[in-house]
Image 1 (cartoon, rainbow, N blue to C red):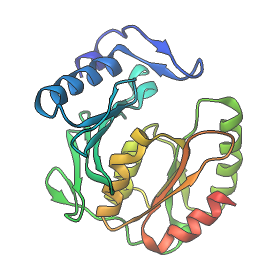
Image 2 (cartoon, rainbow, N blue to C red; image 1 turned 180 degrees about the vertical axis):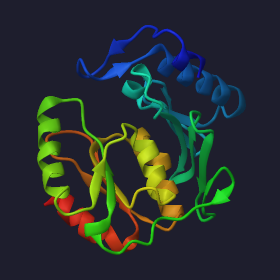
Image 3 (cartoon, rainbow, N blue to C red; image 1 turned 90 degrees about the vertical axis):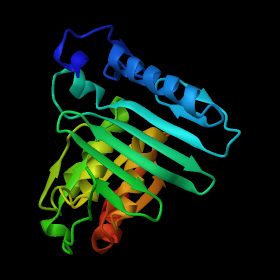
Image 4 (cartoon, one colour; image 1 turned 30 degrees about the horizontal axis):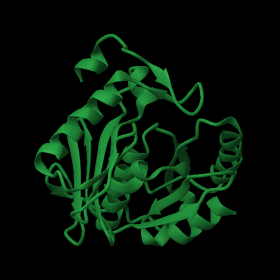
Length: 236
């Protein structure tokens, strides 16, 4: 938060000129890596800014140290820290912390999903035509153009579309009913690992589909009543 309200520091680019990383991203990842190294040295790590290690415990931390970097750098208060712990069956624990709203979403397999300790659930909406759907866009131009074509189709079949700029928080919004559904192509494991568990534990459905035009995964999340129709619309 001190970095967010202070001067922008050491901005660099990654895959494209619009794919940004800040000192806050790397500082956040370093704090987490130091913690894991001290308390869970046998666990593996997969983190967005490059930290990785193999697991000898059977557990792996999947970390996005700052999801929503462009928002962060443009002083838009929609970004979060996303952490999942996976075992050989998938996500075991998921935490997404939004310091701007003092909200912490938590879930563990088989035990439900919570916001600041209060149990949450996905929406009960049954008609896609009245559903509010979140989405996101890639940084590479060709992929973004394809996503825009999909969005132009989706927006005619739903109540409206929202693009907040943080996949982790969008998945949390599905988990607590702020959004009825969410889809995005070209997500990476750290984008969706914690949020997908939160949706599932909040009673929702999460589908993962290989994305077109290269690497990454299309994620589709909603309640069960909307899921098949939304997935079909997105993939068509």
